[in-house]
Length: 99
Image (cartoon, rainbow, N blue to C red; front, side, top):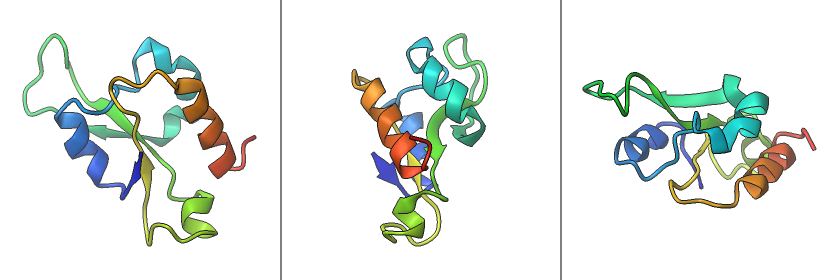
C-alpha cells in the first residue's frame, strides 16, 4: 500500500505492517534499506527492542514526480501477512526506475 509518508508509523505501531527487518524482506532491505521509514515504539520489549522499519520512502518515485498521486511525500508499506514480497520488490523497481 502507498500512503503519505507520515502514515506508516501509525499503521506499523498497530502491527498492521510488516517489519521490514524481517528476514523475508532481505532482498528489499538490501536494495532499499536506506529508504526505510521507522516508527519508535513507546516502550522497548524483547519483540521490539528499538525503531521498527515499517515503510519505504518513495517520495521521488513516478507516483509523485510523473503521476502526481501524492503531493509531497509518499511511502510504501507491506501488509503484515503479505506473501507477495517479490511482487512488492518488482513494483518498487518499477516506480523507482530500478528495473
